[in-house]
Image (cartoon, rainbow, N blue to C red; front, side):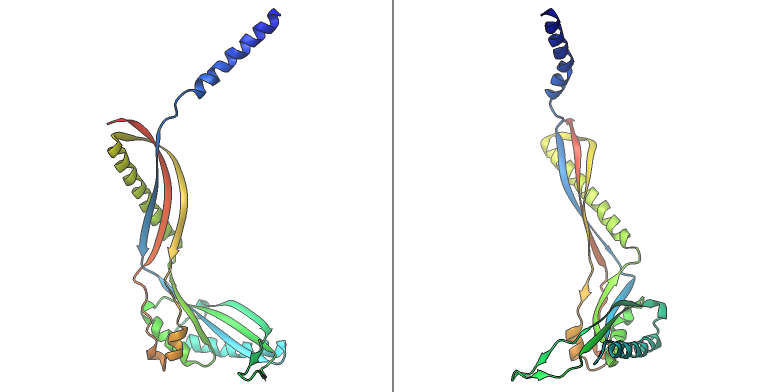
Length: 240
């Protein structure tokens, strides 16, 4: 009986530090979500064009598309775009969708279509409108879209994150001052999302109305905007 009692007392003695620790009040904290933005000037523009052909067989459609693409490549390079700045974005051969007349009769079309999408990169941002107009004037390709970007995409996100941290600290200091306390140690950093707001210009309507190269007004964006958010947690120190 005595051995059991001693064992029970020993167990309580070992458990008492843990019990005492759980009763210790948790250090108060201040948790703040900060947001930040950064705007950087774009370095290049990318134009997407599509070379489309149709034929009765897959082989014929692909062959016709290859020939048309060669003409397009020569045309684009003649406009001052280096060959290495022209890349295939997508290529596909598919059955041509059926077309119906208003009276319900079917329009006879070639059985297969081939689409070769090319991505053109240019650093002459002021000349994007002229380049788009020249592409429009060519009957071998269809203008799809234009977008703008940076060589170092991570730079914009990093600057936005730095701004988000500064914003979080500013908010935390305001809260602490209003509550009559001060900020202690930084305990936690939780990374939030970082996004790029890249201006996209859909030119299909402009292309449909344009009459020549000079009719395509494209104004490059002055900057590309990045946003980021971060959650920071500080220890709340004593009163001021």
